[in-house]
Length: 324
Length: 276
Image (spheres, each protein chain N blue to C red):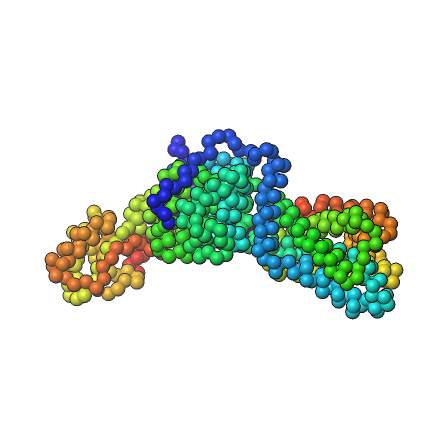
């Protein structure tokens, strides 16, 4: 039996007419990142709230750090950190006051709480703003403070509910760095996201949720294999060169696939794409195109969008469905 | 982000330190104090939120004394002596309304989600917020007695009875505000808390002995005044400030205060637990 730090079975929760969770099973190994991927309203937040002891499910079993969430919520609370979808820092308190309060509620002495607050504020680059009210913080600073607040108790399991929604790309990567560091520090992280890119960058395993059900649980690579994975797309300036581009792209095609003109929904006319295994393919394709003197208007690597993931996971014959 | 710094280490809890430090009750007190401090910081940072316990009672006192005082008793000073103790009770009942509004707003903003995910007693956030409201109720007492003195009000008893009056008034405020806390857990918006509470506080404070002698009222209204918890409170404060027997009314008031706690603390806690 592997060391599971989060385990949930058959979670159900209904709000009025909405079945928010319709039999969700989850499993997260210790020291890993589990990405919970799904569109708005899929049930991601509800699942996190159940695991973080904020919400009782109608049915089902859940344990965090080996403790029954429903029977011993207080023991679970000593071991978790939660950052919700909306930065829940107290706007009238300063950065330091926010973190010290959390420390005191976690039974640190005031002195230890202050020390821990200073340590986290420095790490999150908020030392200069430590004495200012959170009201004056930018969106990114609030997010960081919120995240810092969930780390005050050195939690074993960290729940992050859409931690990067609304952040610009640079801030997003900062946040990813924080998550990776937590893993090296011995924590396990369950994060929800709407972005496949984010789940791919961080998660050891991905659970895809839709309409309150788990529709896939796989490694990012496994998921990509099922969905079609990374695609290299090239659009030559001269549409007549399409056959030459096809020949070049076949050099880097994933095993068992070949380059083909784009036909899927949303594709641009005259573009050619090929499934590839990694971004090293660019190093091959760019010089090859230059040697063949093919001028290109557009060249890039694309992950399947969340839409494509769902399409692939929910339709019986994804390949054909994509061609419609 | 300063990536050059070494990140603070998260050492997973291995010790069996599962219970709170020093037992459940000590923890509740400690956590409530920490959360009360949070509320106090918020109060100090937003002085405009004190209008309902400073400017508002002063305006009411001026209005009733000078507008109605002459008509009601023919002697403004005598009316002020009669009115101020009653108005103190009314202001305290109204002073609790803001608490329910603030808690309601906190829950909407998600601030309480963080508290719920921490190993603190479910009641600590509410107990802490109520405890911090002591400052607001003391403010009401100081402002009304201070401004009343300027207007000509005189304490006719002595220092200790006056202190007892203030203590009783603040104590009543602390019990009465649990209604507001409960309503704050039930309704959706801070505005709705205010609307609901006014519906309750207006009949209670006007349908009492605050503004006129009970024997001037029609019989059915007298019946209401006699079962109104504000009535014995006002009678007691009046006795303690301007003289008269207080024992019976004091016991009545303490009984009402206990009743308020017994009924509304569990209701508020249940409402809080249900508010997902």
